[in-house]
Image (cartoon, rainbow, N blue to C red; front, side, top):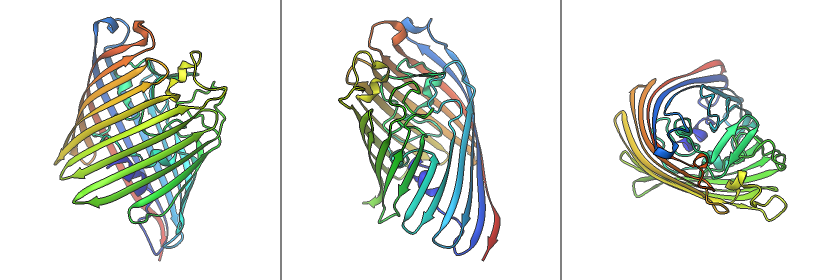
Length: 375
């Protein structure tokens, strides 16, 4: 299921015209082995064999007052085994906790969650759990431009075409009702720092405000399922950001592409040669991909290109990904990806290049049940 559709569907009540208390939970276990064939200059710097395991826990409890109103409490937490390389995008826990209210005038959410533009975003299609945006590929092939470990955070290029600068910071979200396939949203972020975002906890502007607006469209056009997204972010003292994406689906084929641009503000926090640890704040990134699903098998190829406009930092990823749904709870995957990461100097420690070959086993359990219902 597409990420943006999941973002929407999770908020749709399943029991109408009744007072009801329902709960659902999901447990996801991902286990991977990856071998990385680095180019000769980098073989002695990085590990070639990597084993990675993660557990993801999701829970939601909802109370429906009537046909129009319901409240929900949602929690998500995860843990990852990769301790040596902590440039893993969601941090060690990747937690989200928030409450939401559905009403005839739209949905209101408050807590630790993603901004509306991130939730609406579409782009290159995912295959199984593999994604080119916020990719976990860094667990298997090192990218010196993306670093997060302990108190240090350094993103010298953008790691996603989606607006993920604020990560899962505490925020207030509002999303309008669906109107002929179109939804709009707005987010207010009082403190942009988040373990899952791009801003370092030691940055002077980590407590600045942020404002995000987003739009999402889902239409049937000449037999094609068309998804579109737009996003704009104003991060005080940091940067302005723009994103757009499109996805087309027909008869098993999905084509997707997206683009994002960030522009550093011309103030005391503007980017210069002394602050290149967050050179993502003045950069461009795009991706494009296509996948095909037939029965339980899905295969896809994608390309990701990210660069900083104030330095020579650049990342290019080509991915060939495959997944096979053995049953509703078990998925096998195989991924081949090539990364070329270019730093601002010629030092090997600031660059990386090679192929990653990854085998995966994904186990999923989902359950929904009614705690209380009164007609």
